[in-house]
Length: 183
Image (cartoon, rainbow, N blue to C red; front, side, top):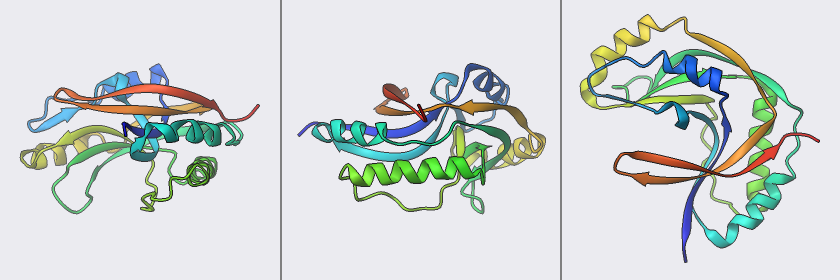
């Protein structure tokens, strides 16, 4: 049966993506995310049978949270105590409405029949870049230089369901459907 690789995310407005793009630096061993691909993942679903997508969309459409404003600040790397593999920018860490939205999205996905959700701690972030092992020293310097980074906050009024196609040139994300937070 055909599947699609799916995730639920918050799109970033153009002005926020533009400011995040100023963080790009020519660091050896670092591959930066293209600005149009920047987003905040609420839940990665992985490969989902296409026949489950209508139920997923129906349940996600019922999610209701009041719109809210998210701060965008700070940079870091994953994993935190090993050579960096991912560079990120923090978004709305500890924000109650963001965590409420994540929980309601999870509840909707479980109701739609997706019961194997990864239950790791939610660390809201935007993935800025991927790193290979040669990047450790330049990334450490970059992290120090950008330690006080702040971008403009943005208003969240909707969340999105995307498909993600892996290609040799990187992932290509396609918006499948946008869901308004409250009517």
